[in-house]
Amino acid sequence: MDKPFIAIPIGDPAGIGPEIVIKSIANKQVFEAARCVVAGDKKIIDDAIQFTGIPLKVNIINYPKEGVYEEGILNLLNLDNVDMGEFKLGKVSGMCGRAAFEYIKKCIELANGREVAAVSTAPINKESLKAGNINYIGHTEIFGALTNTKDPLTMFEVHGMRVFFLTRHVSLRQACDLITKDRIKDYVKRCKEVLMKLGVTKGTMAVAGLNPHSGEHGLFGNEEMEHIIPAVEELQAEGFDVAGPIGADSVFHLALKGRFNSVLSLYHDQGHIATKTLDFERTIAITGGMPILRTSVDHGTAFDIAGKGIASEISMVEAILLGVKYSKNFVK
Image (tube, rainbow, N blue to C red; front, side, top):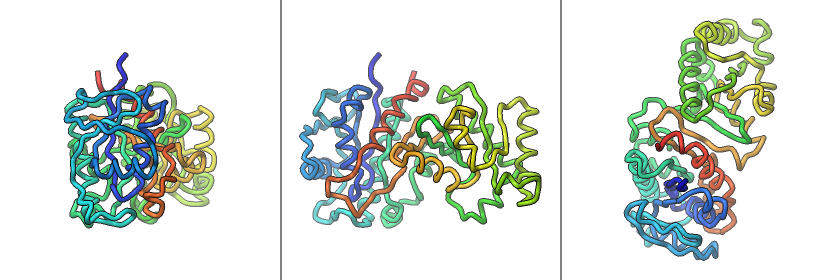
């Protein structure tokens, strides 16, 4: 079987994205698993090759099938969109925000056209996007817009544990208000569709509790009694394999041990803390509900260490390998 094509935008040129992409291309496990196509700027790539000391040869291509997929070669879609006279490593820049968006857009175009099996993204900077007049807050919103997907879902995977998020980038107070019966039912159904698309057809999805001990029948809050339990009971009556609420202090451990095939986390940090404490570098994000597959590192641009050659590529490697793992379900 041919290795799948994986498109990799280098992220914000001023961050650690170019460095971790280069290190990942040089990784033997990645080479053996995928045919990687990098979208970036050759000047940035050349600079990163120099400060990392990794002897890669850059091969400029226009289409993935033009690539030379041999060890030591980085196949690059060169967008040539960074002015090195203006460029500064480790700094917020509208130019870099625009460049990062253009790399992502190019990779999405390839995925939409079925020229690649997945897109594995390096980190971008929200301030740089805004400075560059890119009207998206982040990757998820960009992918949603450019694939015509309304409200894409985020799933984390680490050591086989999968976590979805009912709410993400809102305040904790707002998150509590968004935890409603109808919203939970809608998300569970959509999460189940994502799991099916990924090939996960067996097992029970758990809904995490919100309050301590899932509210103890109303002693510590009414959200479980008024919204979460009714949602789970109605879903079960409709034939969905779902359980909950399961106390948040135990549900992630149980999922890791195989009791559940996934967990619906009710707010951002509930799931982020569980996954990243388990293994920060190997917590990988998957954007679900789209016609294409996107995997991503779940760390930032790390401007403070950009250009120093010390950034770890583990998350980028894992994102690419996870893209390979699930890619067969997206490209036939």
